[in-house]
Image (cartoon, rainbow, N blue to C red; front, side, top):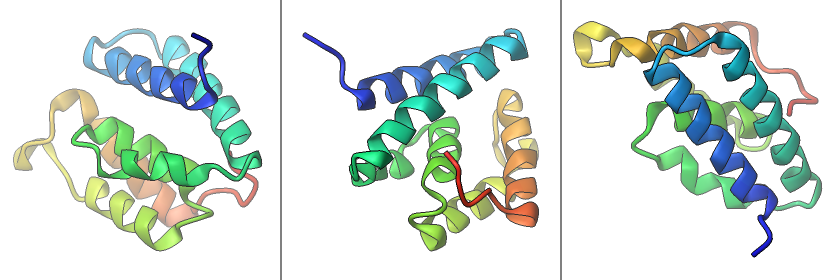
Length: 119
């Protein structure tokens, strides 16, 4: 069965999470960022962005962070809240150590915003 663009986004999310958990090279993390962005753009260009919405409620912090960035320009209030929640997380409050960069990145996204043409 042929993979759909959504399947490729989910695969990239899984790989990015795995890379964080296993402290693998950032170059691999960035490679899957490019893949995630490419296929998310195809989904958005086809006006199917709603298909990504359930991922905003994922138990996985990494998935929520990435999808909040992808959907930020379509659902700013929802995505800002998710980024705010992630930015307030810390190791002291139970955030796994391998996700600490997500907290900092969420803080920076809130401070500087996300480009209007993203993804």
